[in-house]
Image (cartoon, rainbow, N blue to C red):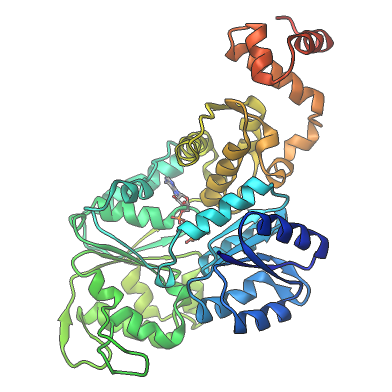
Length: 447
Ligand SMILES: Nc1ncnc2c1ncn2[C@@H]1O[C@H](COP(=O)(O)OP(=O)(O)OP(=O)(O)O)[C@@H](O)[C@H]1O
């Protein structure tokens, strides 16, 4: 029976969730404070931790390093309010599995938990793939080219730099698509039949970073029970993607620089040199040049990584691509959830268009997947969207969109979808024909 720990200071909500998850076959423990959670984590192991972001005396994110250190297989899901999306997105980079915005429904929480249980935790968020990967993996690396000016420029740069052996530094906010851009560069390069190895530098504990990067031989330190290949060796011949490179300690910056310059490495505890032929793509959502000025990042390494830099635009800066990405994520969610939502209603489109998307494409993908799960008609209406998104779309409040506007819109869409066949439209709307006629009169619809 999978074990879940809920960390939530709202005791009533916590107990309700505990009851619901217990009924659904999970062994559920609860902690109402960070301190209690820390104690529990020290003595037991859980498959899933479901933690509120905002807790008295801290937040759910501060627990992540402890969880990742003591129980790397545990998946962490954060429960957030609207204003905390950015924190949650940062938490994902630190190793959290996903976040779920409050309020959520029972189906939604179960779906996230099931996803988390299905997804095996890889060591420190390292993913390895090569071009001979399975269909599923190929699907994961889909890269949609946008049509707006900024997206076209991004695509141009990708095509320009891909065939060269230049190091590329990708900058941009979290969730903008830096990793998928790195994969797109790899796929368009001559190395595309060689490995692409992605390493989240922010998630590797300092103490073992050298061995993670360069590997080790058996017995070289306590805990080195076997020979182990590092990420550099695993990527040999292909591309090494260093995500969150700004998080590397000074010591590891030196080690990386040396390996890149000398094009060879030694495993920890070994004298044997291994020759490298690697293309480096690094990514950061910090201002790395400022970090160089302030002395937090080595200038020589910065120049090595930054032979060519590409800024991946935020979704706010490429709003003209929102419909394209929304359609793309709709199709993706339909196939993942085995649903068939065909379109967005006009009001839904407007909300998606006007919302600010602080978590960028990652947030949009999550919002649409959740909404697909909720939608019961072939058209997606605003009520399926997370409340934060609806509220966040500023003009939504200005026009004071009311329940009746929404109802009217649903009725018109259903009528259009059924070619104005009122029986079919009523069925689609799950109301009786008589109610439909009453509503048509009430709203004076000319149909
Ligand atoms: N061009 C794109 N086409 C299709 N999906 C995309 C595209 N860009 C981003 N995505 C989707 O958005 C999500 C976030 O992308 P990705 O992980 O590459 O962002 P990131 O900038 O590397 O984020 P972080 O800085 O948090 O590591 C992924 O699920 C990815 O599939």
